[in-house]
Image (cartoon, rainbow, N blue to C red; front, side):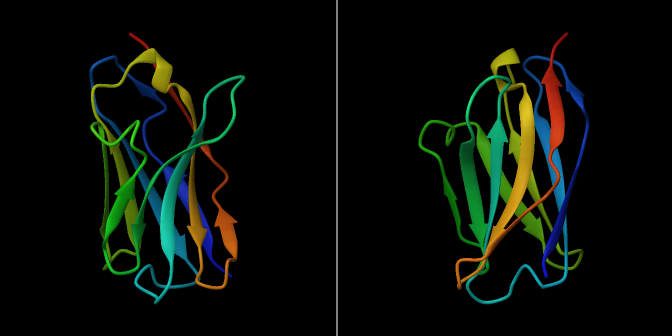
Length: 118
């Protein structure tokens, strides 16, 4: 079973880049059919899908965040990353990394709180 763990700074200053890492265990991130997503939940709001990187390294982003979002990976470390540039307080949220297999099975990390504040 795939397990995911988010890590990164809990506090980011406005205008800086928010950077998070998702460490994956239980399967390779290059396994055929997988998509590896970042999803966030601002306080008092619903879940927002940000984008994904697929098993072949292709990426796809939410149109509303595309201009500021970059998702990449390190296949040797079995990790994938989120970078969100020009952070604002509206980017304050719990950030989750999520896997989706070709069979439709999903796994979630526990989530990490990121606050954007000076």
